[in-house]
Image (tube, rainbow, N blue to C red; front, side, top):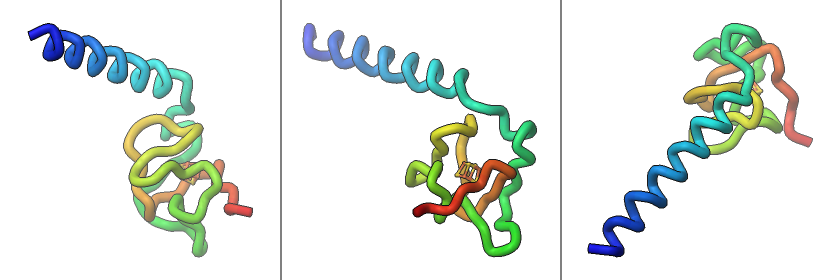
Length: 75
Ligand code: SF4
């Protein structure tokens, strides 16, 4: 029972952390995020992309085939 309680607390802490991290990120609208690639550029080849569906700087779920104005090619 104690283990279940700890698991719930740990899960809540992780969810809180994810929300806090997202709150510090840029809103998709501000970087003109779109669900389609642009001029051969897309999130999966961007240095900011975090597989499978997140971005280091843009908030929310990110499509690997999406694009935004902050695109920076991987080195
Ligand atoms: S293109 Fe924009 S949303 Fe996509 S990974 Fe790069 S910075 Fe993030």
